[in-house]
Length: 461
Ligand SMILES: Cc1ncc(COP(=O)(O)O)c(C=O)c1O
Image 1 (cartoon, rainbow, N blue to C red):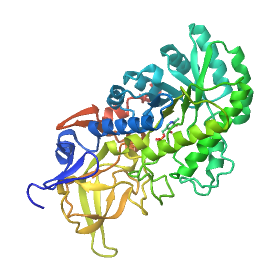
Image 2 (image 1 turned 135 degrees about the vertical axis):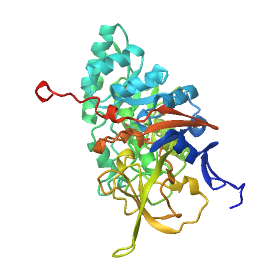
Image 3 (image 1 turned 90 degrees about the horizontal axis):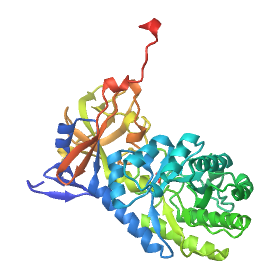
Image 4 (image 1 turned 90 degrees about the vertical axis):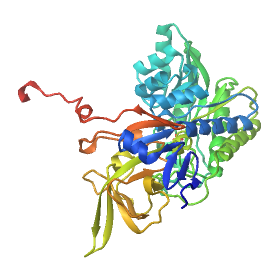
């Protein structure tokens, strides 16, 4: 490699003179300055992704507005949410902590969807008080919303989370191939059982403090196949038509399709079926809106003025961050079963993955300070807890030494929020890169933090 060579990789990553760069920052220098392990988010990548999603949805839905409500769970850092709020995004949240993060992240309350099962009075009160929308998951929540809104002297905007049945779909789930998607989506707890929702709609008449603004679904990432998404939307509209009749010709103002859109750079270890192409987000949005338009027409429901919404998590965030770890030791067995190990200072417990990745690497990876170098051998990359921690199994590596920095790519969704304190390890912090500038947006946890919740009863002091 020449001394001034630049290779542009995907998104905000490039290799310059043998070093990995995120935007204009030398990744190995970030590791040195901010410490490892570390999650590093690219602000530019996040903004670009959001703009791409937003214009893709707008360009295929002209009948009304369209909104992107990124799932906060994928990356709950408040600074990250502030970037999305600046871009005009709404937010899908689950539980009181995520509601707090959405508020602190500057989300327009009207664009917060309060999702999830077994919501308690506290979260419903907060949601209604700030004007967020409650997505009902059961009959119980309808009653609770009505009581709370009446007590607050407000009106609660609510949606019904449905469980459409894709009766004729014969496709197994990418997660659990022994199960059909149509069955899994029925038995997984989320959403109001259809038999309950058809009874429940009659209750709206007496719930004067509640305003039904629309419907919601979230299938989850069961399939890349557009046929599955078509089937989901068709069965969604059938159920809407059935409920619409029971509600005296009701037409929703908002129709939410949830998240679950696969992304080509996702090496998710939970996904068993990885074969086949991954359509681009533009194709998913085209499929959903096109099918929705046709299906609504078929059941005689108008679409003019309907606002459609999506709640992408992994697809929006995945390529916005990398995870940095430092090689602390290299080991080599030359006898019995010759083997190489690079022992790094991160762990499966910081990466939301299992620790026996024998079949496929859980991430694409680059040795940041040796990015242009040829590989010299195969090695395991092993994490730091007392588990076996085979993060990577026999992957090609350049000559590896203590101090090398390895970047795991596409680590922007569900990695940091799944980190835990196994072995009493402090969880890694998160930094944000913007151009040639980088700063911490979530500090590294300390050992003191790890024990902050412990209390010693008097007789043990
Ligand atoms: C209601 C809801 N919306 C959106 C999402 C985001 O899903 P994904 O990250 O697969 O896009 C989730 C994830 O669990 C969810 O529960």
